[in-house]
Length: 355
Image (cartoon, rainbow, N blue to C red; front, side):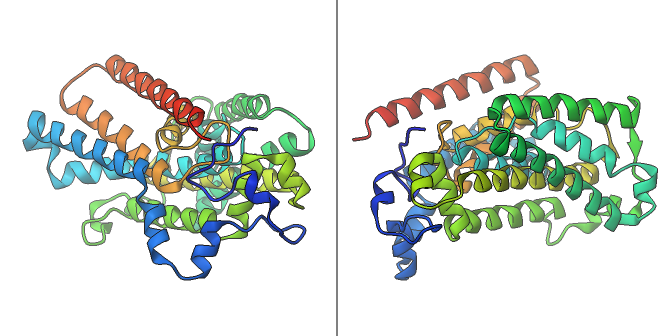
């Protein structure tokens, strides 16, 4: 893998620094954190790319205010945008870790579908909300572990392994449901999606998304796990020579992605009140697109959680604007594709300008 790491701490050069076996290279960012330099922390949160994404969001909000001001700038619509961003946002957090580690996961949408239908079977609902949550997380984590084992110890190319998981999970979800919708009858689950459960006007799903985002940011930027993830994505061979267990790290990355899918499946069940084999359709494309827009390199070694979350918000806001202005979904898909191509081209140009 090549590296264009400038935003995240690890690069090939940093691996030359003295580090104990099994530990990731010490980076300037980690040093800054250990020295208590809040200025660098703020710089990491609000780099140029992040500021650019905030500018894009501001422009989209301005367009919404001009074209549909009486509908777009309302509390209910803003709550709707945030709720719609929450489910795919959690999936994107997991996808960001995988992509920073130099991989790709095409099975996230299918895993969400499988976890959502498995946790809404009659047998599972008999155990109440605890059984539903446990089943969703277990299915997501199990699928992620299978992906990780196939890729790390197979060894299989991530594209092929996750593509096989995508097809298999979709088929199993269809077999479980028989093509029908499984309605949720557990009141405590349905209550989480009602307005009465909002906390100071904030839907519980948005709070869950915020918590996952914060945990993801801490895991990536303040832990050894995060530094190792950046290291294996930037240069896996150098990371191996530095004493990092590359295969085990990749296994944990795909397990983390699967766990995020399990959480997203539960959130989707709360949102829709049902489980369907069609849930999570095209989530893999949306999550990858949001991560790319957020600055995550397809080649690995660089990316931020904040950038990916802002990428999700950009796509969700665009979708909301298209709906409010009664534009056809075909134009939305064309615009989404154009944005992805532009983002990748900008990434390649930026990488080519790196010294």
